[in-house]
Amino acid sequence: QVQLDESGGGLVQAGGSLRLSCAASGRTFTNYAMGWFRQAPGKERQFVASIGWSGARRDYLDSVNGRFTIARDSAKRMVYLQMNDLKPEDTAVYYCAQTRPYYSDATSRDEYAYWGQGTQVTVSS
Image (cartoon, rainbow, N blue to C red):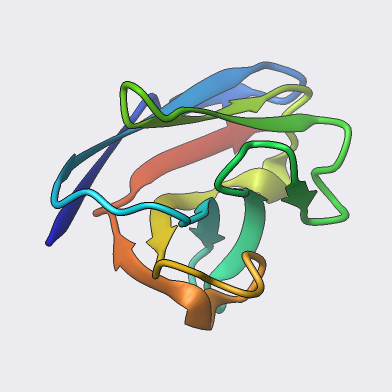
């Protein structure tokens, strides 16, 4: 099994920044992607960003593209989400996730086999 632990959430004013971190432990795999999802109260969990196995491919939700940046350090088994120019609509619980090996679409929630417990991000207006 894989354990994922997120940190870095908190309360920030609109226009501010936060950096989320996710530490992976447990069983190791190759050829997997890492992603961040978020879930606001009363809404479905939605894709935010993903980074492929090599780090070359990164995908983003349209509304965060240009404001959020995903990065990974495979040697340390860490993944990060730098969030700038935060908006009240970014308020949600943010989840780190890892796909199964040999995934096909890192933007699809169905590809993800392992999930963290989530970290709350609240953006005040």
